[in-house]
Image (cartoon, rainbow, N blue to C red):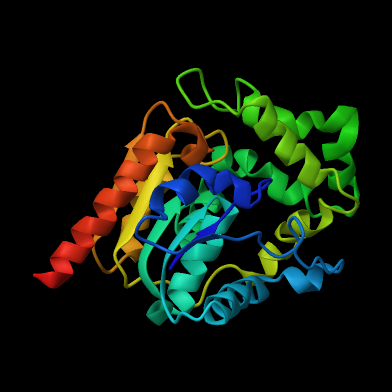
Length: 269
């Protein structure tokens, strides 16, 4: 089983290039996280604590009939993937995270680096009730579109740009009534759950990072090494954006294959 966890503001579709690529050797499942798309979306923020989100992954794994998986997460899904790996190490054979550092690195770094605090300003903005959701809908979801397409935050000229159909898929999902509240509620609990009590990651780990990430400083990627007590590989792609698995799908897929096969070979030896 290969389980894929998307980021914000996305849904399972952000993994479309990987779903096609890895189905030859894995049962590939790309989830909609709690509150996204057509999943159950309880309205109260209490239902979006990190404990609930981690347990969701454990429950889904078991309901699919598996007791372990290759776990891959991007952005907020990367945060959840790190936490699942820390809390339920027996469930994760290999961990792959895209553009999100170890959660302890994130919380420590953000307190010491005002530049990252500013880049993560939306975490604080999202603490407000209803207004963040409203802001995303203004002017036909202009903010949502610009995240993926603008020069500052979007996929660059050398990347695999989103097509009109791709953008339409995102707009369709997030224009449904109440569709933004669940996703933003994920952020409304973060301060009650960090910092962590347990930190160590004990399975082989691959961290992929687009250096042109407008939201995450690349220095956090290297510091993450401290918390991984197994084989750790970091690959930074200099021309790539935050939306790495969509921006550079061929390179990302190749790097994932290399990591998976290398580890399998090493174990057999």
